[in-house]
Length: 335
Image (cartoon, rainbow, N blue to C red; front, top):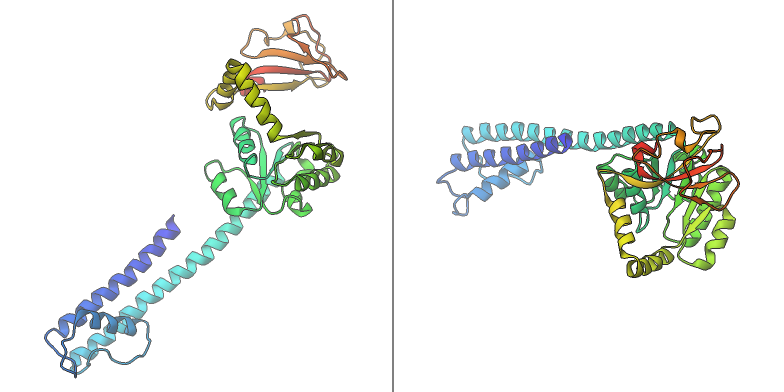
């Protein structure tokens, strides 16, 4: 804002000085007439001031006859040129500082991204991507956004200052700039299904362990996107249809989930907790921990290698390394 303020002050000063000098001409020539007999008016005085300030050289718009006229005209040229020089310097500084500031901010953001580990890359800020970003912010996940629309990224990042990369998400160099090799997951939310297919394949080529979730409008292409490297494919149309049915037959459940997801203060979510080897939970019972008595509700357990879930596991259940707990609670308590 300071740069804009300095530029505005410079141009207001230039305009103000020209008007003030024009008033001086008008006072000096008050009552005088032009060679054709017409009265010298203020517009003529302003015109004389402007062509003198900008050294246009069209000739004298006002008859310069007396020594006072000549001295004042020299004063107009000196003050006008000085003010104009100041205005030009501020304009130049505005342009140069803006570009320099942009370069410095980009470098700072690149360093920030380079230092990130196990973050998420969100590709696309369209109809689906923007909600992904909102959820990432609400749950305080580390993430980087990739999109070709620089202005859209600036607007979305303004209030949250999340890192982003401007460019084609299917470009390998752009993905490298987003730290794809160190990322834990990528959301492919580009507009076209084929773009998401290419993106999933490119991400898998550069990171064999990354989790890839892709958007797909055409259900027929979902298997191809999985074959290209995606771990999961989500169809907005399918989800929308299921939502409509749920609103009809189980409105209370839908209302509960909506309130949970929209609550910006409590941050209540259904989360997963993986039991790693060597962790405090590995080899212990649920009853040995404060999970059952805390604000975290254990909803289900998936044991190592199993595809099914144990819903509402008993407190005597022994937690094996590689198991995954599905819990409901505040994201901070879950962590």
